[in-house]
Length: 252
Image (cartoon, rainbow, N blue to C red; front, side):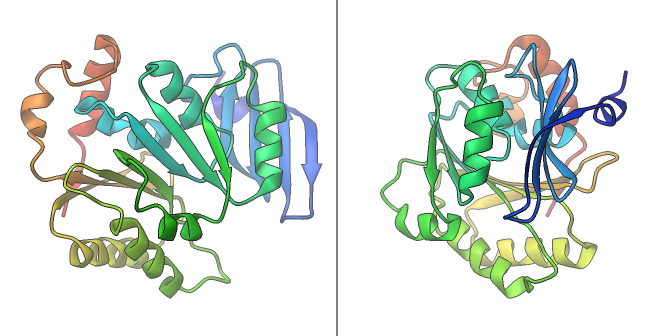
């Protein structure tokens, strides 16, 4: 059965309407988190570490060619990326920065069945970015949400804070879940202007609204690394499958 059909057949476990509307539902196979009835995260209950939504694979594609030790995620959601990465290799230190206490509580109660060992900091992402200069940072992953009450000036400020964390070896990944073509193009243009040390590649996730943007250090020999998986934590069969996804990238 397709995932879209599964999530139409769930029972509600949790509902909180104080911060928008946060809900948790499940059926025999999946458990999912939704904000205002929009599904954010889906967990396969028998394999909680598995990535379940296509955009998550596109977010994880830099694993094809480097082995991060210190990964920071802005926005916890249902914890899919944290469960996946901390299961992938014990050398990975994964930290999630989440502003909503309700989201953190939902994760701890419903989306952490195996007691996943990664840190969660209850903090505003922009405040954390302003204070994060001393944090060892191999990879920074962030959602850029455009809401009707938020003008793009706020996002430009956030992009500036994000690129301010880049070193010559830092990878930056952005997920734009529901942005117009104009917003995406402006985002790419601003990223070009804010930094020159990184190559910008992006992906349109098939059948989804997500645009995934990666800022890859220019000095990385990506093409050489993609020929074999000696620089990857990924199992060989996963490496070969994901390598095909990398070939559909767009470059700025």
